[in-house]
Length: 478
Image (cartoon, rainbow, N blue to C red; front, side, top):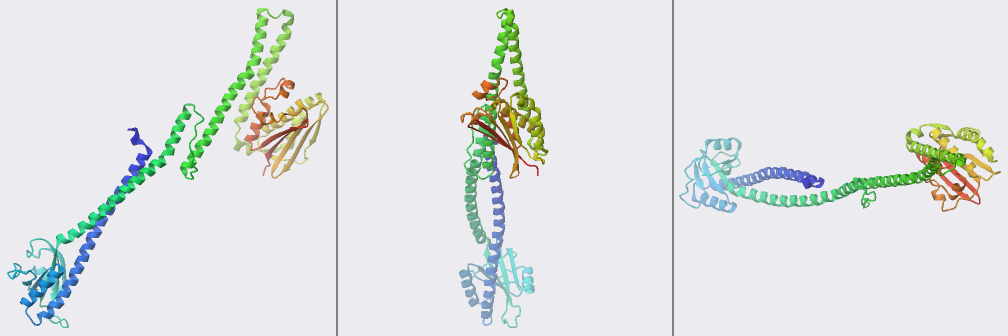
């Protein structure tokens, strides 16, 4: 039963019904038009024959009577030549001659209906499907015209009636109809086959996408669908699905990495806290050293607190609405100045100077002020943390091609080329930071990168010859 619910079966049935209805309409129309055409064509042909026979017989009738053998022989020849039956009547409608070879013709002496005589007398001709009032045993296609002995001064002298059997016309019509029907059935079958193959081919990628989605639901995030360079809607759907799959896979990998990293970061302080607390409780640690180890416990607890705050910050920046953020604007120069004021004590305590190059006029950029403040604060704090004592931190703000650029540089240990591509990853801490940054949890630069990504900004870092420089950019406000 499920197969009958398939989209390609439904499409095929729909197309088949449309084709069948169209063919039926065409067949009925053809039958009606062709039948009318055949009858009209035959009637016109018979009328032409009747007029020609009327002229010929009228010329003979001037020298002979209508019931003479000469006239009889003439209409027999005409009837056999044209495959028609010919009757000649006098002016009252009584049949006086016939195209039958039998001299004792059954038709002679009979009379055609008075209405036929009247119609020909009034209009000059008559056409009908009729038995002529019993002259014929079955219906025939009949045409009749008047006979005149003198065409220049016509006077009504009689009638000439030509008839053809209806079966002959029906045979022609049936033959043409059967030919049309046969051709139509072949065309319809070809349309069915082509539509079946086409709809099935069109439904195949949709089935592949459905199967891929099902595998996704079961946890297989590696599955992709074949795009086949299609330019139609199916191709767009395939590409959109693959983009969604890439995004989901990255999200799943990020989730797994986050769990692994958080577990790793939590494991060390929790182990330390638990070990020292148990040692104090069970007496393993002597009383005179309890204060020392309680200090370690306090330090590790604060480290856990910073880790939790960092993760909360990370969740907050990941939830930033880019469209909403880009509708706001602020002075980036003012943000840098306020960040320097906030970090002044830390910079001074480390014996550092600040070499700042910030324009006095406002540099208005699009974005969320609080989020960019965190970016600037983290970069300056990071520079102060790893700078050599007695050196300067360089900060510069400038505009270029509708964007504002900020550089933050410091003199310190060079970051290796292997570490540079990883520096913005979550929980990543270089060997240099592990030895110098005891309080960090490896989320600061990741948060910076996430905030800038949500603002359509860019950031990159260079580190060589003991000079490390971070450069980020934001769009200027229109």
